[in-house]
Length: 162
Image 1 (cartoon, rainbow, N blue to C red):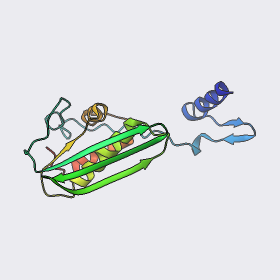
Image 2 (image 1 turned 90 degrees about the vertical axis):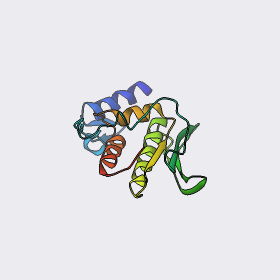
Image 3 (image 1 turned 90 degrees about the horizontal axis):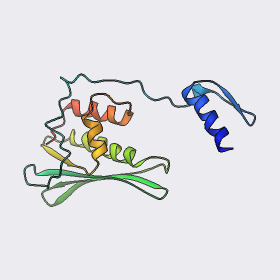
């Protein structure tokens, strides 16, 4: 039964062919397709100096820090960030995701939300994340992840990120 379901999934989603499954007609147009690749020219997105993936310790270099976390425990997936100015919490954000979402999706969603919130401030901001894969995806010039593409566009908008 599982093999039949996987065969139908491949036929409908990847091969874009309609299929009949237990009397239901599955039309490939009814299923979400991955967004087309939207590469950003490297000259417009120079993040090598702005995104660090090594171990760092929060400092007073920028007074405004955003701490992000995406997680999945059993069947619960969520994202959250906390913005702090010195020792004061000035903004919190959280989202509960579908149990089918991955940790990567949770981590990249919270990074995007933090970038978008940072764009609303006129201060330099440092975003702290423990998501190596999310940060590497942000540094990439081409990605098929819609969340990362939207985060790239938010970065290009005017964020003052440290």
